[in-house]
Length: 233
Image (tube, rainbow, N blue to C red):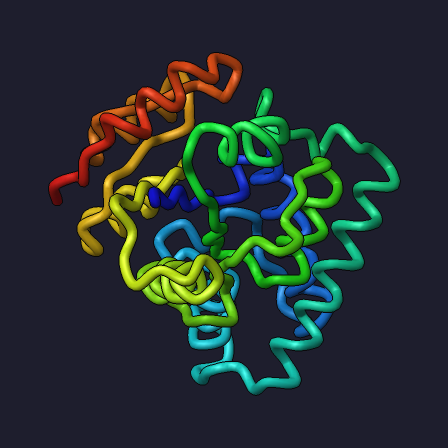
């Protein structure tokens, strides 16, 4: 049995930009500090929990309390829903991602999981908006730790339980960020990047051997999965 683990923003859904905008506003609304979308690009851990910790340390000199993180989560989901109501194009799928995730993976001899730096509620909202059927699929989320390695590790552990496997014949991580490449390298996982133009070049420079622009060419995607290698740091 072969496991493919999908990131969400920029990998399955075109939500990277709206997520940044809504996160920055949610932080400002709940904690009274104006932050600019993308201000956290140098954050050590690019996850909702990691960015929240980073911003709290920077602005308040401490880690957030649970109730402060909870308030931020709720406001973030409210803002995402608000933007979805204004313009659904903010939440479009990466071309053919829904069909690939919902149907083709299972038909090509793979099983699937999700590993995202998003908190679970916002992740599920974005997947629903893009018609991606995540229900019943094991996943790892920002609640599982600030580090991407913790999040992917949680997704793998839940996949072992869900699919009743001690080990998988292979595990391939699919993502669009340089941090996704680095996480795969640190965990020794094969990797397929999603991106075009400058994004694709960044992924290759980070160590990705296989990069696709989207999921339009299903045969090419599954060939990449079968041939995927672990990046080298």
